[in-house]
Image (cartoon, rainbow, N blue to C red; front, side):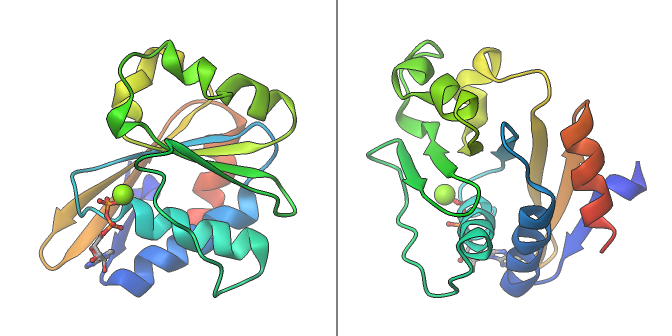
Length: 154
Ligand code: ADP
Ligand code: MG
């Protein structure tokens, strides 16, 4: 499905994808960011959060050790890094379901660690190395992927 892909030639292009996705994000949305170390998951998440905050200089630390960082932006956004998660059931202890129920959105790095605990409508964004750049491949089912796909075309 060519319409659900975007080639990202450089870091700025990854950031622009994050900004475009921020426009289509709604309460309860989950974006699962897949890819190897260095694929650009954090680059995309940082740009998306800064766009929601309307603050290009906002500090967006990696949640590697805390597992989640939350931001009170116009749409509350919760940035998860599940690399150190020991089991899928631990996701609930981090307040994942509550955050969504309270009208937040979630960005999830290393979603493979808790795939079974992610909602059906999760938007999967896989970043793969392609030459010197990256290819972003979107997949999923439901309203959120439809919105994300439209924002891809921008
Ligand atoms: P991850 O969170 O997936 O481990 P990071 O976002 O921390 O990855 O790091 C990605 C690295 O790749 C950064 O050095 C960034 O500058 C670079 N990068 C991001 N997007 C691109 C791109 N589209 N093309 C080339 N380099 C990129
Ligand atoms: Mg990362």
